Amino acid sequence: SAETLGMFSSAEASLILVTKHLSTIATSFHRGIAYVEEMLRSQLISAVGREINSNDFDEFIKSYYPKLFKEEYVPESFVYAVRRPNHYPDGTISFEMAGSSGGVNAFGGGGAGSNGGGYDPILTFTQKLDNPKPMNMPINAATNIALAGDQYVHAWIRTEFGSSAGPGPRLVARARQFSSFLLCIGTIAGPQTFQPKHAIILSNKDELIVPLLLEALPTPKEFRDAIKSLSPEQRDFAQAFRTMQLESSVFAVAIVQLKPQLESVLQLPYTSLTKEIQLTQNLLELFIEYQIPPDLLSYDGDTSKEVEGKLGRVKEHVAAVRTMIEEAKEREVKEAERQAELKEAARKAELKAQEENRRMRRSRQPMYADDMMMADEAMPQMMMMAAEAMPEMMVMEDAMPDSMEVPPVRARSLHAASADSSSMPKRSLNKHNLRATEAGPSSAPSSTPDTDGGVPSTDDVGNTINFSHIAKKLDAAFDEFDVDSALRPTKILTLDSTPWEKRYHKTLLTPQEVKSISQDEKKRETNKAFDLLDALSKSGAEAIRYSELHVIVAATHRFDESLIDTVIRSNANPITSVERSALIVSST
Image 1: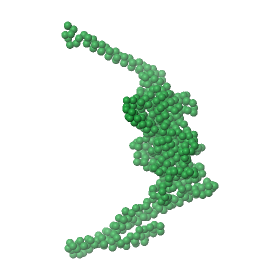
Image 2 (image 1 turned 30 degrees about the vertical axis):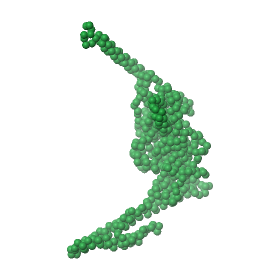
Image 3 (image 1 turned 135 degrees about the vertical axis):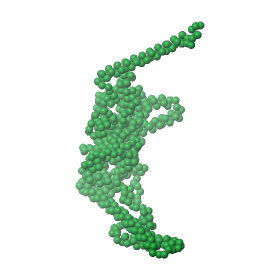
């Protein structure tokens, strides 16, 4: 027929026309929806007064929590003063997140924080444990310290809109002038074990900023859907790995007050070191730099004596140890000077022998080759004869103490004497061998506590919470009650490769300086802090009673779109969703 003679039939043409019309209808529908959304967006912005973002939502939630919860359950700002009761604080510690509210930060200033970056303390659901069991903290393979102070559990809900992620949280610690405390950062490694990863001593207006990283895990529903098609063995592996992730997500911070713990380990009355600034600094120097055993400095007299008498006795012990250290340093300096003089005398004797050899060669007639070889072979003996009496004369003239043993020098070349002296092990006074010298050849103290007043046993009566299972309980609650599948368990991490920022004053009157703490410096600071903890606990024999442990678990409530798009496009009220999440976390 005529309709089939062309390239396209009328049916095909009709199909093309209808398809093009449908595309036009879809485009018009999309434009209409976009117009309606834009109109609703404009109306919402007009109703609110301005375009709002996630920071505004966080500020609203802060003001909304007191209306939602009773006073005893309202989330609190994570800002804590390091202090003993009824005393001025030694410092502060805070957990901060970037914001724009201009609220009060950990240092009593504006919301811009210490560096003007707009950081505010986070809000956490907090529970203080009554009569808790001591928390074990291993600092090495042989020493396990018991933290017998207060223990806190914090739950933090972080809201996130869209895929854009702002700067991560940070831990900020600041010490006041003439005050000091010790900070440990780590994770919960077991039912009653806190595993410290980093530690540092802060004193005299030091300010430390530790950047942290947040790692959100899949929601329980996402995890269950992901492993649905796996084999039983693969599912078992995935479930075991997720359990490990949840247990390792429990972040913890420990604070140790140094002055009251020093009073305890030195058997001094409570608050006796409050005004003893110089004595406290001397004690910390002896414990950290030289690792002096606390038994050499503690009070060992009549327990009924007055405070001044006990302090005077401890000051005498400190002065005696410092005098011994200074004398040892002087002996090391004299020994170094003597060795330098011996080397110089050997050098001069060698030069003199060489000059004498050259003079003899110039004055004599040319010799045969055999005679030349004999002269060269005789040179070491000539040098030895020239310098034979030199070391013994110097030893006789040197006014050395009677306790200093000088190795006798026999008739040999000064080259050999110098080589032997350089290869001899020198006993330098440092923080590693001084403690061994004072403690004697006895073995290292056992970490097993004494039964007559040492570390409290974990079998003692006290409330116990398995901190490592908190994240698993929260994950189960999310799976049961989070109908939106928006709550994600979140790990709080510290990265070794990320430097810390420390602000300090070299002296009392110098301005504040800023330095970056690298990975190697973190290890050195951690070793110093552990050395001090070893002394304050007598290598685990005495509990650290003046301490605080803060355990933090985090969850992220994530919305797929921005705040405005969540309200307009998804037609959802984020306040209701966050309210349900807060009730889930607070009631678990």
